[in-house]
Length: 444
Image (cartoon, rainbow, N blue to C red; front, side, top):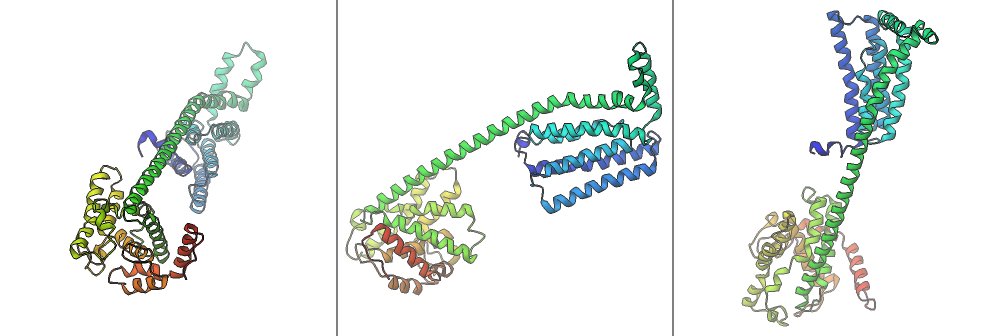
């Protein structure tokens, strides 16, 4: 993902991971302060340092356990991690030094990454209250620099000496801290809020535009696929209708291919190849398996009698023609995987598993899986359908013929997906037959 899309595509998962890293960064602050202590730059009680470290460590550990159990994609995770972040920062603020004010911006920056102004403002409000509580708490527990308070009191006393009504503020260290330490820090946050809000709104708008653009592109892509598929079906039906099959072969074989794929998936067969994308492309490419017939003469396609060896050799060429048509007509499409599957099905669906098929004489798994599946679907429909040279075979006869070709014409695994589920196939066949011809009696 590019940097320009990083914020636009931010999810709860990546945001929670980012904020957990921010929380872990607090541990870096502890290490930094510890080093400063060793150098004599910061003077903090070692016992208080370890108390603070234990508290923050417990907060981080609790968050790690939460995300380990619930996962980073939980939407409520944002509230868990932001609350923990605010608590950890204010523990650092109280126990160590209230001079570390930049860390107070971390929760706000983190909240802005969620692209939700509501989360941003809630985080700010909680942080605001936490700062006003932790500042006097640090003084009352003796954790802050008393000299700094006295210096500020003296400076303010000189400034407001002409305003007797404000004199009690100067004489009250806690109020002094709230007005001249906590309030300025909150004002810093107030100054940052508009910028973060603007960033949040921009990111949100850009996200919406990106989502809308992607949705439109997806819709257009789906519409184009539907149009392309209708054209493919129409083209294939025109080709098949030349030999009076009226396009039923296209519809039937596509349904049989889907049936075989479902049963292969149920068996766990060819799991590495039968990915969702491969299956989608295979089903969409199935109608093109006989596209090469467009170059075969009508006199051959429609011949009622038995073909001569020379005529059969001409019919065989439809596989080669199909491959050439795929290259010439479909060769410019961007989806090369679709082209590959469509070409393999058109070119290899008459190969035989025992190596005696055509046009290449491929054997076994050298035949592409899509073609091995199509071979079963193609022959099955040829047996069950009427042709110029034969009547339709019964379901029983078709089963007998198909089963005899296991390991010969057909891949035994693919064929078993049909034969092992023959009763279910018969139900589907009779149902489709009844829908196409309501008056016809289903075969048994």
